[in-house]
Length: 180
Image (tube, rainbow, N blue to C red; front, side, top):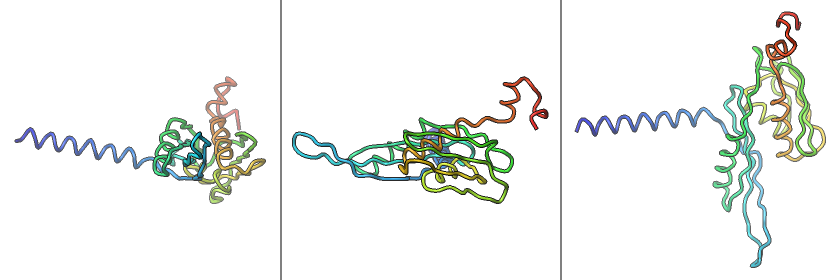
């Protein structure tokens, strides 16, 4: 009987760890679209979900899921977002180290660091990406396409192209103090 209790307790601990790991990630659905495919018997209806996943500590990803029901599409989108995670270098002020641009399809996104207390000045999917990445002070401008998916991917590309001061100093073979 003691062994059974130990097994139950260890399985509970494992379940608690799983929920802790899962709760670390936040997910936000940006768009759900009803899409159709024309087949021999008529039109086949399905749903496409654009989901942004992040931990607000410098990791964020954009995922797309498609399924015959909304819940399945969102679940697939979350899984896809976790596969395409990007690490974002954050400064002490919870901003980004330098200005950056990114492109996704016909969308362009320009992001710039901002002073502490500014907040996230961005719109739509770009705002969601920046918030879930953990950036607190940033200015962003969406240029070109208004598509949420392309804008989210452009923001992700802009964030992935960011480099820390240490990386820049190392690539130039100079000390960090000399960068300023």
